[in-house]
Image (cartoon, rainbow, N blue to C red; front, side):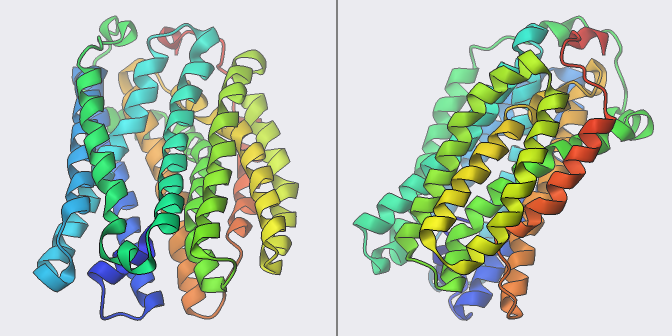
Length: 392
């Protein structure tokens, strides 16, 4: 999403700018839709054969696909084959990501005691969020150093190539990991974890989707900002990347102390607190973002990041605690990915479709119903923060 305008020009050159952006957003949505499928495959295998093996495979696939996008010839050189390969790489990315974060948080949570579960899972979420800081920062730097023509020609490829190469280092680092004791001690094997999940844990699955919704929406809104700025003629391309970088920076850094706090006050209370903080901020943001005042927009992005970090530090740990060991990987993958498909994948698609129809809505408007739903569901669900995972 951060580089959608450049990818649109490289692979959809005959479209007008808005239609090209819409095509890239649809491609972005395709990757999101692939996430639940990848999550279900990884969850099934992870619940059967162990967390570590899948933990290795997902990052290897993701690195390959990301590098592939970075070196892929454009439509001008390969024609429709370039579009098919771009779609394929995006699908592979989606499949891999679908198993990556759920696998990481499940693996980490099963290695630690209950009093550290929130900090460990929240640290992983913070690290993933900080990856967006690096991406937005790189976009900011590239737009500052390179000319617009250079960005369209080759500058947009740099983040994808770097991301693919960094993934190789991740594969090497994970070779030293050992399987979780919780999984090794589990004797309740399930033939089809997904079936048991939908049959007996549908309430928990629904709650998990809602837990992931706020983070998915905030990430999507931040990533959509450069596109929104361009469509609304607010600021410049450099300032839009600056705002996205600053928003993600506050969001990721503040996730860590709130992850620690979730082990002290419980994740249920913290999710309720975060949703109550986001509601007034979101309502005010809708009006101020539409005003076009860049200073006001930046201030409100920081407020959204601070309020959202309260949720970001607790939600993944709360999802892990919803499911028993024999279906935990599948449950976390299903909930997390479906939440990101519905709220993360559809948000930029809906906003861009509205803009194409002449209705340019402030992105933060989506946060209002999402925060209300999180507040209600968190209030209804029990807190399991102090329970050992073996007892769930």
